[in-house]
Image (cartoon, rainbow, N blue to C red; front, side):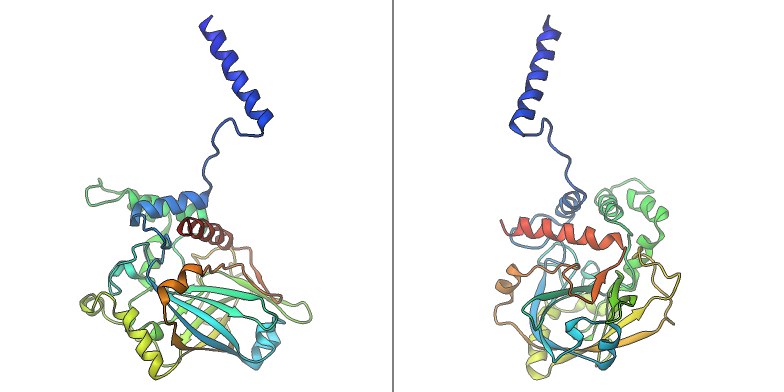
Length: 330
């Protein structure tokens, strides 16, 4: 009798849920939500800050296209005069007080918002890694989970050891990013592939590379650790006040057979590169902390003439950034 009453109650709750349009059971969080959750577990929750690359500084400048850029893509970005750009340099992790020279502050990042002539915007998000430690959003979530379970008291082999053994890029990607003497002296790479489309419809897969005109200047890890906790954040403003910092914007072109759907696999160094133009960073904004609150950089915020590739990590990043933005805006 008890079982029948429980059964009827269960059926009634299901029927009520269906008739009211509410799910009978809570949906499992999305991969993006799970990723941000584990970042919060690793780095802590810091109200108003990004779940990753929480510590940053905002600057402004411009992008001037090269003649070669207009030939490879019909994007308006490459067809006309210089356009304004908002730039955010950042440290890795979701810890807003991480020392700039700490090992975990690598890879440093650079995110850009190009203000196009028609009033629209285009985003580019790059960092100092030469390739990414995971190929999909699910793999990256699992990497973060493994890291969260591999503290100093964890039994060996740790969850992170096991993940790295099964995913070789996870063990090596981090070693490709090293601390610079200045945000203006770091090379930033686009680990994801995108696609140029020219005026005739020809398509060409590529990856971005931003190379400092003054040359890259990398600090030994020991030297970086001795610097002040905010040496990168404090250095960039005065540097720009004296002289703009410039980057050559390059596109590394894929050849047939080069994978475009796996950010863990860099293309050979001998692949052709095209000079797209020059990014000039001219000044730090007066109130960086306030300015960055409203900034959301999305890798799929593109313009006609540049398209996403089949790299699944692009959409995974978009979804995770949206979740992070939603939470820090609350």
